[in-house]
Image (cartoon, rainbow, N blue to C red; front, side, top):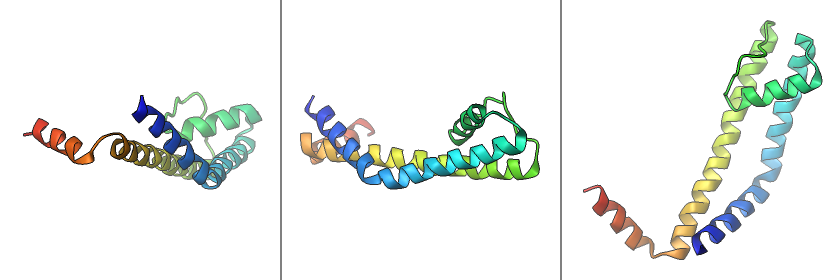
Length: 118
């Protein structure tokens, strides 16, 4: 339980500190999605939905751009989403590593991992 609480504290703190960057990336994703939606004559809801599906690289295919500029913006949205996801994963990884250091002797954890893979 101690590990989980330490992880959550560090993860939320990391998200809080990275919030300006994360939010600006979300605004880019939504803004570009709305531009694509206008070019493709989609509703604003469909455009925002499509931009999030594209930014997470799910790509359901229920909406797809046909204009060249829209396709280019889809690539920018996907690339921004990959970076955004990477930052969140990096914060989670840092939080987990620091939580292990706090809750257990890291040398014992490393020895356990090394003995497991031998």
